Length: 131
Image (cartoon, rainbow, N blue to C red; front, side, top):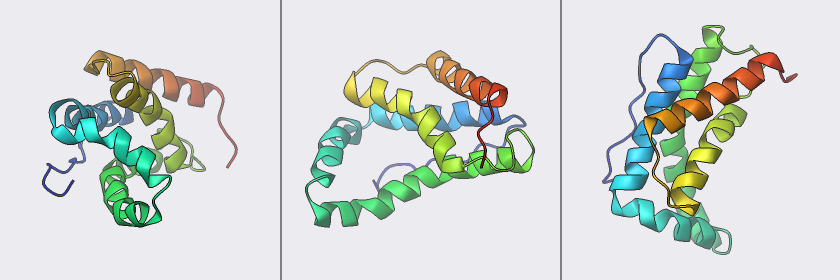
């Protein structure tokens, strides 16, 4: 992980565009580095190996933090409600991408990412979740 490029927080005006960009960066990591092929095995092993889980947890969190930052900025700008849980939004938009890339081994495109992000956020905006 430490040898791969970190995710950079995009500075676009809209939350949707920022989410698409940062998830695209992650998808390139999944699709174009050797670690992308190893992550499913590491994730499975973490469930049964407390030492591995403890060692990988900070690395995984550091990879997730730029996504959380993008979401928090969207909340600050009023694009999502003040009571929105950034961790939940991260799970919501990343789940389909991770499933497609890590489990199904299907190509991840910008178009697919945008569809996931727009559908997820539209659903949230129509049906806000109480904090």
